[in-house]
Length: 129
Image (cartoon, rainbow, N blue to C red; front, side, top):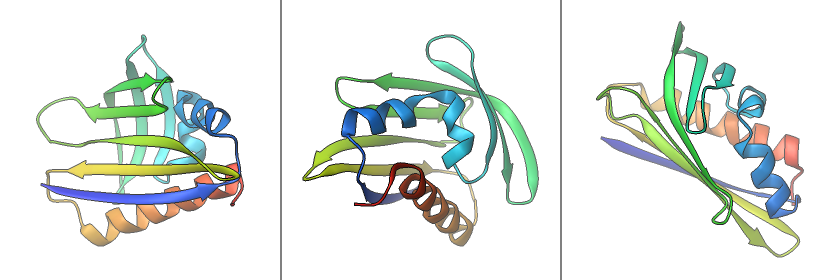
């Protein structure tokens, strides 16, 4: 089990940033490996991604808490993959923290590159502070 975390500071209003990041149709715009995401009910998504050179599709839990500006997700099954995203107010903008929990044997360098690219995409889309 390994945990990874990144934080970005953006110029966007925290509520606007949360609404953008919590919208399933926006996930492929900022999640580095994701190619498609479709809501299937209030707390489920069907996603497609390119992961370490292979195409994967599946269903995932996806819960949003607008009052806490928090999104939580997790893969189906027992592979231990999940994470959360939290948006907080900062002076002049918002802080976006992305936390990832990985249990299976994915390459740590690849995970770090993916997280770095995802954070870079968030900064590009929401403006840097």
